[in-house]
Image (cartoon, rainbow, N blue to C red; front, top):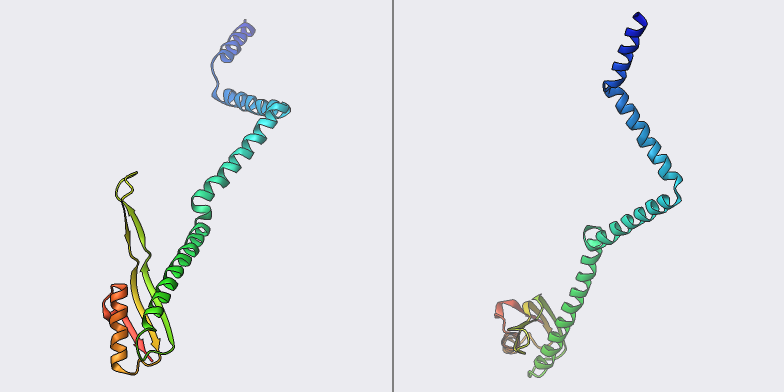
Length: 175
């Protein structure tokens, strides 16, 4: 009789959920499922392709944001500097032609520094109305032969201020 009671207890114990047994069996199932997955050739291809896709997405997203942001900024700056230099050269040539026409002025060297480039602002889409905002000049340095004469120096300063639309305090003339 004791044997029958012991068997009943064992059958009841086997029917009661045991958390340690359940977790071990689920771990075994997870390992088993992973092993079965790794044996499946299609599953391996899907994992490899998925991983490659994720890596590709990572590199693409980093090129649009933080990853290559410094490189983009550098190239934008180079382009901006190039546009700024072109605008400065255009203004320097314009000034050189005008100032060289003043009596008493000989050889010239002109340097223009810009705060901002010229901008085109459109009023409405498709209207064709646009406004061009002139570049903002930070300052002008002029080395002119003949500027030792105060009258010639004053003419150079006034002409430069009027051509560029800037205050004469932003203009430095020397000889």
